[in-house]
Amino acid sequence: MSKTASGDSKNTLYCSFCGKSQHEVRKLIAGPNVFICNECVELCMDIIQEEDKTQLV
Image (cartoon, rainbow, N blue to C red; front, side, top):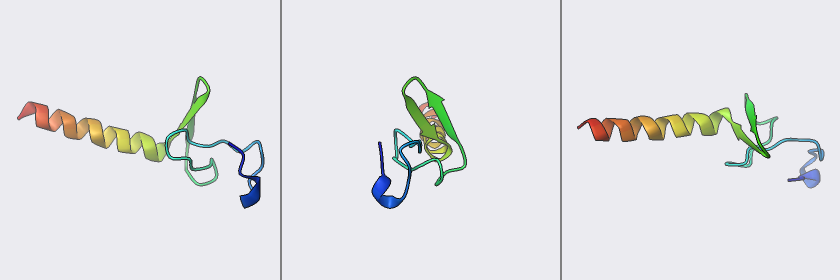
Protein backbone atom coordinates (compact mmCIF):
# COMPACT_ATOMS: atom_id res chain seq x y z
CA MET A 1 0.00 0.00 0.00
CA SER A 2 1.65 3.22 -1.11
CA LYS A 3 0.08 6.55 -0.24
CA THR A 4 2.60 8.94 -1.76
CA ALA A 5 -0.14 11.46 -2.61
CA SER A 6 -0.71 12.07 1.10
CA GLY A 7 3.00 12.53 1.73
CA ASP A 8 3.68 9.05 3.11
CA SER A 9 6.66 7.24 1.65
CA LYS A 10 6.65 3.83 0.01
CA ASN A 11 8.32 2.46 3.16
CA THR A 12 5.44 3.43 5.44
CA LEU A 13 3.69 0.43 6.98
CA TYR A 14 -0.09 0.14 7.30
CA CYS A 15 -2.47 -1.90 9.42
CA SER A 16 -3.91 -4.67 7.24
CA PHE A 17 -7.27 -4.35 9.03
CA CYS A 18 -8.05 -0.61 9.28
CA GLY A 19 -5.49 0.83 6.87
CA LYS A 20 -3.98 3.35 9.29
CA SER A 21 -0.30 4.10 8.85
CA GLN A 22 2.38 3.42 11.43
CA HIS A 23 2.40 7.17 12.08
CA GLU A 24 -1.29 7.20 13.08
CA VAL A 25 -1.13 4.47 15.73
CA ARG A 26 0.94 3.69 18.83
CA LYS A 27 2.03 0.19 17.79
CA LEU A 28 2.03 -1.87 14.63
CA ILE A 29 2.52 -5.60 15.13
CA ALA A 30 3.98 -7.57 12.23
CA GLY A 31 2.91 -10.99 11.06
CA PRO A 32 3.71 -12.90 7.89
CA ASN A 33 2.93 -10.31 5.19
CA VAL A 34 0.41 -8.51 7.46
CA PHE A 35 0.34 -5.88 10.19
CA ILE A 36 -2.21 -5.12 12.90
CA CYS A 37 -2.31 -1.93 14.95
CA ASN A 38 -2.93 -1.58 18.67
CA GLU A 39 -6.37 -0.09 17.98
CA CYS A 40 -7.50 -3.15 16.00
CA VAL A 41 -6.07 -5.46 18.67
CA GLU A 42 -8.10 -3.59 21.31
CA LEU A 43 -11.23 -3.90 19.17
CA CYS A 44 -10.63 -7.64 18.77
CA MET A 45 -10.16 -8.00 22.53
CA ASP A 46 -13.46 -6.18 23.15
CA ILE A 47 -15.28 -8.48 20.71
CA ILE A 48 -13.84 -11.60 22.34
CA GLN A 49 -14.68 -10.36 25.84
CA GLU A 50 -18.28 -9.61 24.81
CA GLU A 51 -18.62 -13.09 23.29
CA ASP A 52 -17.21 -14.63 26.48
CA LYS A 53 -19.76 -12.72 28.59
CA THR A 54 -22.70 -13.91 26.48
CA GLN A 55 -21.51 -17.52 26.57
CA LEU A 56 -21.32 -17.47 30.38
CA VAL A 57 -24.97 -16.43 30.73
